[in-house]
Length: 171
Image 1: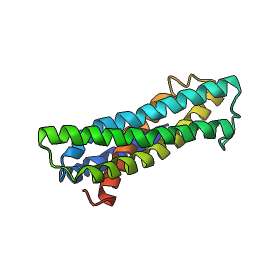
Image 2: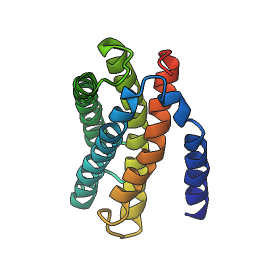
Image 3: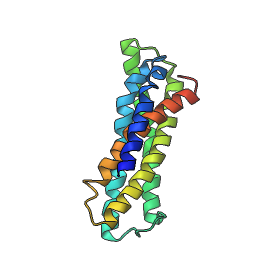
C-alpha cells in the first residue's frame, strides 16, 4: 500500500502545478467539486454492488470480470454520461449567474463528459480489483474498497478533468 500512497502523492503534486490551466475559464473551478464527488459516488456504488455479489456468490472471484460484473460495469458507464452532462448544465447555469468566464455550454459538456468517462474507466478498474482483493482477504469492502475507489478518483478525476479541458482546447 505504501507504493500506492506514494503514487497518489506524486499525482497530487502534479495537480498542484496544473491549476493554472483551469483559470482560463474559471467556470471550470465550479465544475470540479461536483465532478469529483460524482465520480467517487459512482465508484462507491459499483464497489457496493460488486461486494454484495461477491459475497452472495453471484460473481466469480476471477481477475477477468464475468457477465454479472460486466453488467454492473456497463450500468456505471450508462449512469456516468447523463450525470456528467447534468453537472455541466448546472455548472453552466451557476457560472452564468455568477459571471464566471465560460467556454460555452457545448464545450463545457464535452469537457465534463470526456473527463467523466476517463475517470469512470479508472474508477471501474479500481473498484473491481480493490473489491476483489478486499473480499479475497476476508476484509470488509465497505471499510476498504469503497474508500480506496473514492480516494483514487479524487486525484485521477482531477487529472482527467484537466486532461479533457486541454484536449478540447479549453485550458
